[in-house]
Image 1 (cartoon, rainbow, N blue to C red):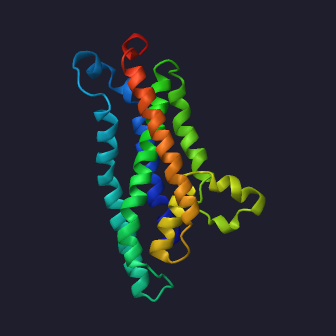
Image 2 (image 1 turned 30 degrees about the vertical axis):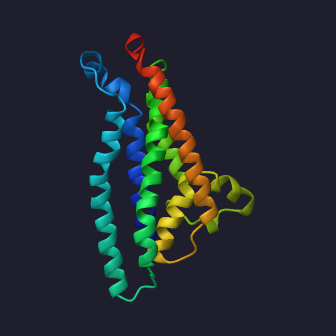
Length: 201
């Protein structure tokens, strides 16, 4: 149960950020067309407000962690790494969801049907991420491709700091680099599309 919660808790935050920011232009076309304000505030507010949902799920996970630890389960939280890495992991998830979401949002101004593929794509992506299974179960020939998924080392690190295990530092660095690239591309596309999106939405 703890293994599953340690995977689904960060995944839910990332997937919610992605799906909600991916409809920024379409969902807020009425407001954007009447009042001018920095459009990037809208997806940023979604990412920040989703922290409340994450906090509730995190507290639930933390409560079960305490319960199982009290019962003598073999869980070994590294509290120094918890304090150090939890904000970093949360930042990677937030910016990865934001970057990917605003890229999709920029595309949906012209390709409206793309919106319907997002929810289905996120569900498929969960099975390409070690949310409900460990990386050790994946055959070695596929492990390389799994590790290219930027959410894989994030979830593995989240499990490691709370349940015990090795942190995939190299994978975490690659994940942070991919997140930075996607966020940069997303902001560039978002800024470009926001000038003319009212003509296509």
